[in-house]
Image (tube, one colour):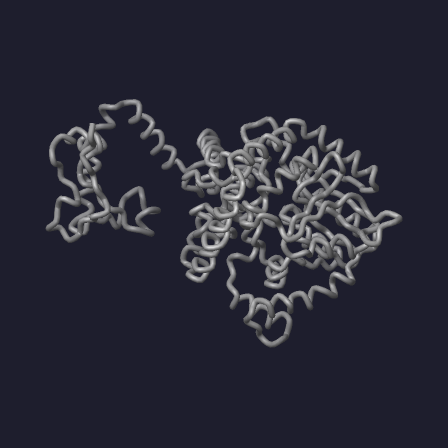
Length: 492
C-alpha cells in the first residue's frame, strides 16, 4: 500500500463532506464502543491490563532472546523461519516460496502486515492469483482492490446497499439484500478457491516462543481453511508479536476480543504448531513463518518502544473522535487512527507523514481504552515536538508557537494581550454572539461557528467572584444568549 499520508487534510475534508460515510461510521459507537464497554465489565480490566502490559514489556525487553527461542522451537517442529528487514524483502521471500512450490493460486486471511508488503500486487506481477477470504477484505478486493479502512472491520465504511450492488455487479447474480443471503453467496463464491488453492497466507496475531506456535484469531473461520486445505502455509507477521509463554497468550486473549469487537472470546482461535505430521489427518505439507522488521527494531530502546506493545485490537480508533468522523482511508497508509498516527511516522518517516501527529484532539480516550496501556496521546505529542525541532511544520505555525512561548514567560504582557483579545472577540460575535470567520483560525471557523466570549478574561471573572457579574444567563433579554454556558461565583 502506497504511503499517501501527506494528503490527510484534503482527504479528511472529503470524508467529512461524505454524508453516506458519516452515517456508516456511526456503527463504530453503536456496535464496537458499546459492546466493548459491556464486555470488560466481566473482568477486572485495570488489573488484567496491567498484567498484559507487564508481559508485553517482558517480551520486548528481551526481544532477541524470545525470537531466537521461537525460531528454535518452530524449526524443531518442521517450520522454516525467515527474517525480512523490510516489507519489500518480506514480499520477495513469499514470492520465492510461491515459485519454489509452483504455486498458481493463493488464499489469504486478513493481514495488515501483508498490506505493508503490498503482497497481492507482488503476487499478481508474477502471475499468481491471490484471493482474500476474509469477507470484508474480499468485498474490498472485488471493489478495485480498495484498501481496508479499519484493522478489524476493514469494510466498516460501507453499508449493506453498497455491498449488495457490488455483489450483483461482480457475481452476475440477482441482487440480494438480506445479510444471511449475501454471506451465503460470498461463501459459495469463495469455496472453490479454498479447495483449489496451492498456498495459504495468513498473518499472526501472536507468536509463542516456548512452543514455536503461530496464533490466529478470527470470527469467520477462514483461517482454518487457509491453513488446512493448501499444501503450503505461510504466516507473515511483525517481530514484535512474540510472547514468551502460553500463559502470556492466555492473558492477551482475555483482552484482545473484548477490546476489538466486544466479545468475551473470538469465534475461532487457532494455535498452529508445525506442518502436518505423519499421524495428522490434515494441515499443510510445508509451513513457513516470515518475521518482518519493517522499522520495528528502530523503536527498541527509544521514546516510542511502548508502541510495540500494540496488539492491533483497534479500540483506539473505535473511540477516537477524529477517526469516527473521517474513517481510515484519510490516514493514507496501512494503520489508521491514533495507533496509525504513531506507527506510520515511525515506520515510513516523520517527513512523509506531517499531518498525522496533528490528526488527534489529544483527548486521551485512546489511552483509557488501550488494553496494553500505551500512552498514545503522549507519543503523538512527542512526534509534534520532533516536527517542531526539525522545522517540519509551516513557518506561521512555528512563529505562532514561539510567540505563545514568549508570552507564557512574560505574565504582564500575557495578561494585557488576553484582556484585549477577549474584548475584540466579543465584538466580533455581534448580536448573534457567534464568530463566523476569524483570522488565523480558518480551519476552525470554516466548518463551525465559535461562540464569542463574554468579554472578560478568567482572571477578571474570578476577581469578581464576590459580586454578581455579567453572564450569558443573566441577560434574559438577549435572545441570542447561550443558556448552557454559565459562569458561577465559586464558594470559597
